[in-house]
Length: 70
Image (cartoon, rainbow, N blue to C red; front, side):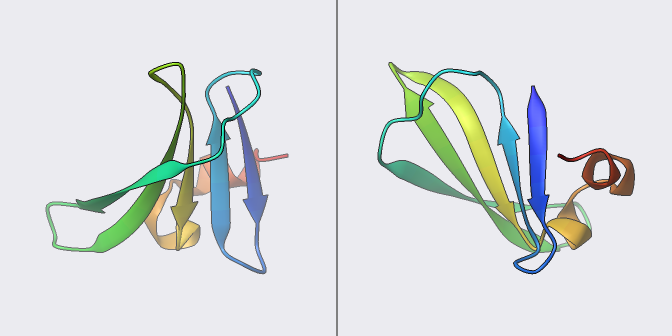
């Protein structure tokens, strides 16, 4: 797994595999117990989840994950 982060867009991408991604994605609305909401874009290949993009990443993801992003 690897993570990239674009601070200008405040978007992170979590790669779950090194395989090529196929075009198309599903938008999955999510919320935490405190009611904060966000969008996660799920990318699939051959029926398997291969990566996810998280918008508003600074608010939704742990700081240490973003700090280690390449």
